[in-house]
Image (cartoon, rainbow, N blue to C red; front, side, top):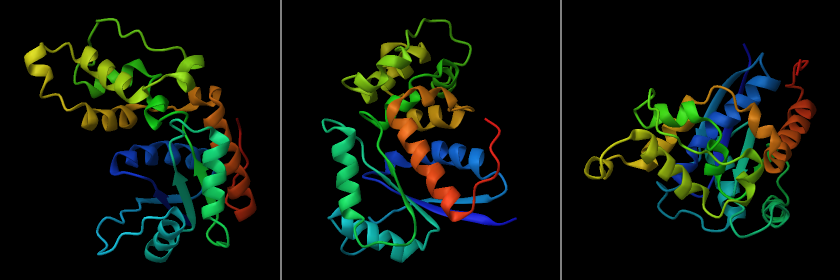
Length: 214
C-alpha cells in the first residue's frame, strides 16, 4: 500500500490533537493510502525559527513531508486574515502542497460536539450529570472554547472539588479527540468546510483521492 507522509506545523504541542481530525479527513478521501503523520517539533533545535515562513521551511527541510498542514487559531483575527498570513508565509514554496487549518476561534471548539467522547475523556463514561453542550451553530462565536471544554470535562468527571484539582484537563482534552469516532458534524462549521475543501483540492491534484461515496 502506498503512503502519504504529512506533517502538522502549529504553535504548540497541545495542537497535536488536530492530527486525529486530519487523519479522519484523509482516510475519507484517500482510503487506499496508509498515513504517516507527525507534529513538527522545532523546539529541539538549538535556534528554533520564530517567523512563520522560516518555521515552514525548516519543517519541510527536517521532515520532508508529502503534505504540509499549517495550523493557526483564528482567535481575535478573522479567518481571512489568518489565511492571508499563512499564504504570505508560503510564498515561493512549491513543494510540498500545503493546507491551512484555521479553527474559529480555537481548535478546542472542534471538540465540543461529542458528549460521549467528553464523558469518556473525563474517566466517567456512564455519568448522568447534564453537560449542556453548546449548539453547533454557536461553536465559532464562543469567546473561550478551551475553558469551556475544560469546564465540561470537569463537570463530566463528577469529581469532588478536592479531587477535581488533580484532573489535568489539558491532558484530558487530548482524550476527547481520541474518543471521537466521527468528525462529520463539524461540516456544519464554515472553518472546517474551508479546511475540507482545500484538502480535497490538494489530494485530487496530487492524484491521491479515491472515488468518494459521501
